[in-house]
Image (cartoon, rainbow, N blue to C red; front, side, top):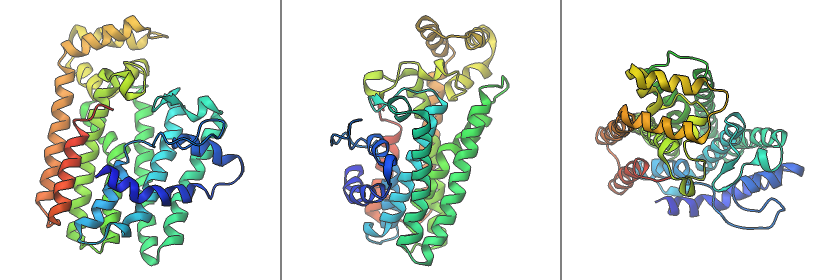
Length: 330
């Protein structure tokens, strides 16, 4: 499914990015994995492509041809990558997809401005390529992007708080990740001519999928293999993230939580501290708790599909995609 959606969307996405002028083009192409830093063409691919796939499946869930969802699929991928460019700066991440991030390869300024350009381009794609439906979808994209930014802001604020609850964490992740996934599938359904009930059910699936996706991402942020994830081991610990496993352990209290707080208070968290923190999280049951949260939201996503009438083939692929989200290794 991901390959099929990528094949459908890749050409229009490249055509949209090709509209960027001057010094914007090279770092954008580099970020998407289309060129080396010197401009030499390659094809590393640009991530998993879950959001464009959801847009395509949203249209097919309504019985429409996948091609009608392409503008929404391109737009959501542009917004997602705008957020990645900025997130890498915020998180001081020097590596993404086994390559230097744009800010570390070029400059912080270039990464910021290229992210801004992709954000603007997303709305141009919708408003120039569609009729009045494009205005409706652009409005939905604006709402989803605002929620994503709000979630990112809350995530940053959590680093300065010692009272973050698991409910706080999940509400933040519903905004940061769930909102854009809900937009992706909902916008595809709108372009496919779906009724309001189907659009609502698919958007509920998208939010729950986002929570499952982010919980599993939080798992990989602590226990992921660097050779597979493309990020340093224990990355979320070094960044003092209040992610699901970390909040679960802190909320449980006791000596383990006390020691985790001591580690997070250190000016520099070295490799030994990372290893100790991982062991503390394991002993506190944080890994199992995070896996369970991902599974709960997976089941809720599947239940949302059961509550509406979805084309059979699309329903099967949406179920497969949901399961992939909580089984992936990167």
